Length: 107
Image (cartoon, rainbow, N blue to C red; front, top):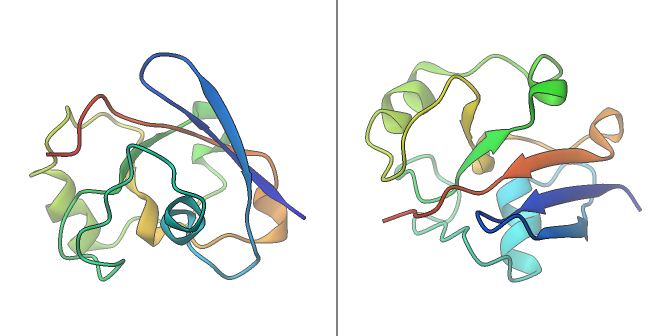
């Protein structure tokens, strides 16, 4: 099964399995990744699933929507050029091995 690796703010790496079609947030919450709160359940109404996409993977993701862009402006942790909402990253076979860094806080 394809995988996503989450890197915690302390440097700890946590690989998990992901199913094609589910969001990175859904995979993270299903496998209890600390650091993904997902308060809105993946409806792109909060920024509590904020992640930093590893630079090697950033260009492989679809463009950010205007809604996602606006929500990231209110994220608790610093917004960086590689910031994304994990609820908006739909997993596909070509993303096997995706690396997402978790911010130090979501609230």
